[in-house]
Length: 112
Length: 113
Image (cartoon, rainbow over all chains, first blue to last red; front, side, top):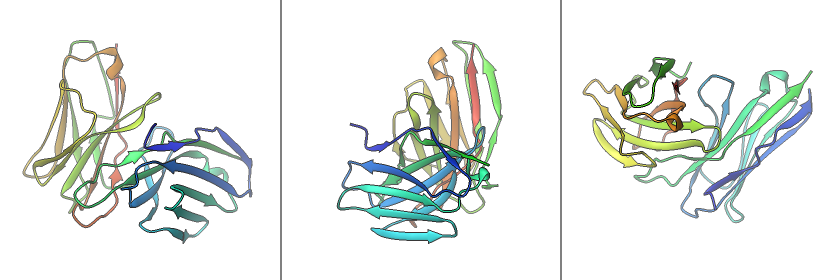
């Protein structure tokens, strides 16, 4: 079992839709959770960074972490064509261990 | 722009050859990480350096090695290249020790012919 599992999609939605992207993880030591966005031929770009369980909001993006069920989500409101990219969830345990473990990514297309 | 610079952007070489990938971290970041991204494996952590010293190792082959120099730039050396080494190689940097997130460069695309 991979430490971080992510539905690869692809996911195709109309402009303005609410998008839900999800990951599960198996390592109980994971404490830090991130969402990265990766456009074609570019490096992953940090979108959201959370430490604890609960919600964190930044503009149209909301990251949600449920440590009890080892489930992390990213919600995108009012999705735009410019949101079309691959979204990667990632986790690490912290302390002296900064090794990021990534999901395989979900390819999202927002159609105008 | 993440502030992490990787060169070259694209490298084409043959099996058995050796290449060096270069990374300049963001200003002020002491830690550098190397990752390999392929279609089947996704993003895989290779190795981390902090202020010149190796800090953590992941799924890095013995044919691969890295180092971080006093000016904090880092190089990833890949030798005896095989077709399966064709992938995107990313460098990331962070202010390790303060639980800060990692910021990625745009990668080097390595193609082995």
